[in-house]
Image (cartoon, rainbow, N blue to C red; front, side, top):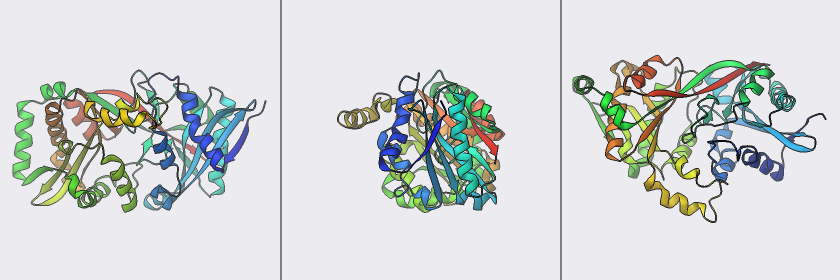
Length: 375
C-alpha cells in the first residue's frame, strides 16, 4: 500500500507528531525519554524564540492506515544570513524500518523546502545546531547525555539510501574525573598556571544571582568564539535567555567558569549535571503525577556531567584555555563526587579541541552525523 503523507497543522495532528517519538522509541535500548513539556516547548512556534527567524513544517507518514513516521522541514533565516547560503533543514525524524516510508518523508521535506526556494538541506537539526543535532551512527550501547540524540541503528540506512550524504561528523568523548586527574601531569598544571600568570588571566565561577549580566557576557564570547565554526548560528538575545531559563534550575555554579584578562571576559565553560539520569526514570516523559518528585529529589543524586559548551575569543585561542577549563572542571567534579563526564559535541575537524580532550585520557565513544542533500 502506498505511503500517505499529511502535513500536520491542527493541534491534534501536532500532538500526534510529538507523541510518535514515544511510540517508536519506548522499546529502544538505552533511549532516554525527554520531558514531553520540553518537546512541546521546542516545537511551539509562538513560544520558542527560534521561530522569530525560522519556519517549520511537520509531516506525518501513514502506511496501511498506521502511523509510520514523521519529519520536520525547517528554514533558518539567521543561518542563511550568516553563512550567505540558501540551505534548508530537516529534523525530528522518526520512522519504522521501511525505506518507502523514509523516502516519502524526505521527499515531503525536500518538496516543502524547494517551494521555499532552498537549494539544499542539512539534517538532522532539532531544530538547529544550538539545540539537539546529528544522527547517532556509533555508540548505541550507552544512553545519551542531556541534549544529545539517540535513535534506532537502522536510521542510518534509511537516511543514506534516500541519497543523503555525510556533511560532518560530531564526536562525543567520555572520561572519569579520576582518570582525567591522573592523566593531568604536574607539567600540564605548571604550564597552565604559567599561562594564566603571564597573560594576567583569572578564572571565576559564573554567578546565578547575576545571571542576566552573566548571560550577556557568555553570548558575546560565544558569538565571537564560534563564528568560524562549521554550522555556527549566532544566538539572539531571546534565544540565549531561553536556554538560560532552561538550564538555570539544574546548573551547578562550581562547574560554570568565566576567564577574564585584566578584567575583560575572554572565555567561558559550562558543565551541566546530566539530568538524563533522572529522565530515564520518567519513561513516559510526564512530570505529573509522580515524575515531578523524581526530578526534584533526584537532582542531588546525579553522578555524571556534560561539558555542554566552551568558548574562547578568537584572539586568545592560542593560549590553550580549553585545556585549562577542562582541568579546572575535573578538579571541581572530583570535589563534587561526580563519576563521569561527557564532552560533546566536538566537530570531527576541530583538531585542537579533540587533541586537548584526548590528552587528558578521554575516550571517543559516540559519533553523530549531519547529512546534506542537494535540492
